Amino acid sequence: MLSIAGTVPGEDPKPAVVEMAPSPLADRPFIPFDGGVDPATLSRDDLNKDVVITATVVKFEPSGGERIPHRLTLVDKEGATFEIVYWPDVAERIHGNATDMPFVGQKISARGKLGEYQDKLQLRISNPRTIRMQGMRDADQPVPTSVTPTITSTAPGALTVDQALEMQPSREEIVVEGTVSKYRESWGEKAPNVLVISGGDNVIDAVFYPNNGPAANPELLKEGAKIRVRGERAEYKGSAQLRLTHGGMIEDASTPMVAAASTTTTSAPINPDRIVNSADIDMGHVGHTITVAGKVEGLVPASEGKYAVVRDRDGVIVVYLTLKLGEDTTVAERLANGRQVKIKGSVEYSQMRSQLVVIPADADGVIAPKSASASE
Image (cartoon, rainbow, N blue to C red; front, top):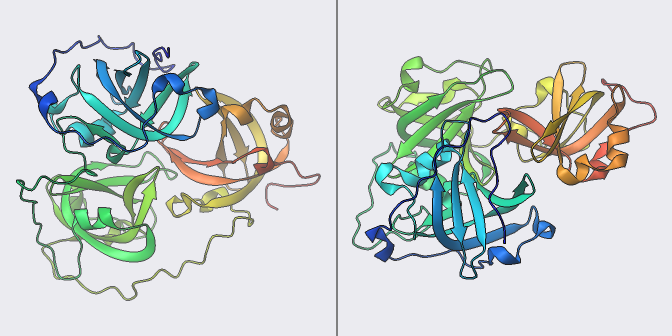
């Protein structure tokens, strides 16, 4: 039987466990994801595999702060327990309000990559569309015929938030209108500003970097502002987002919409073998494979692996190593302090570190050339 994961190092002590009485919402229809597996059948051989868990809530531990996740303990029909965790910013999109909080006896279906923390298996939810809770309509579930969908009026040529969410990722520029529900300012050059745009019952994040072109009008970043944004439809860790070139792509929705000079980007395809300097890595690289090079300055332990710090001529690159790579002796030799190294991996945005990281897929992505320099 799987046991329950503990507190992440450095976090506040775990809040009191909430033992809630069964809710009458349990009688509402529930549509689980297809392909569910029993928690008891999962092992470490399944780490990083996409799995679906459908089980019943026996315990709910609410977050005690922004850096502490909500924890759900589920039990399957065989009595095996399993933990699902998700952070407060995701919870806002799942629960909506306090009356929608999980309850004992509630059926839950979730999908995602199987992870591990302190030798315990768990599923971490970063996309609200990958979890369904009995009694609450998930964004992926059909809208009941008795409910009239909210219709949002937009300028000709502009999309609603719902329409943007239904699109596939594309390098083509789109225009989306909605209302500002939250704005999170970047903590530094390597982290983007995040503007949460709502429309009807759904939201989408618009991300853009500071000091990268015209700044946004501060009035358009305030909660309740009616705005129009131009950007690419992208995804980050399964969640839809809009990537803006700069803050100037945020407009007042009450002003006439001017057609874009071009509906396609002129950016060249990203060459995975071309070395990219740290100063040039931005959100446009997220989800793409790149190569970086520099001198190793150290390895930092993480709860589920290690971080390698690599410095090139422009700054620092953070490389995330999975548990398997972090324990690989060959990789450790290549990442010895002072060694010149090349890293080939996918660029992702780390929510825990609030910055972009490079993630090699395997040991072949950590290359120690015989003769290399940070500026090669």
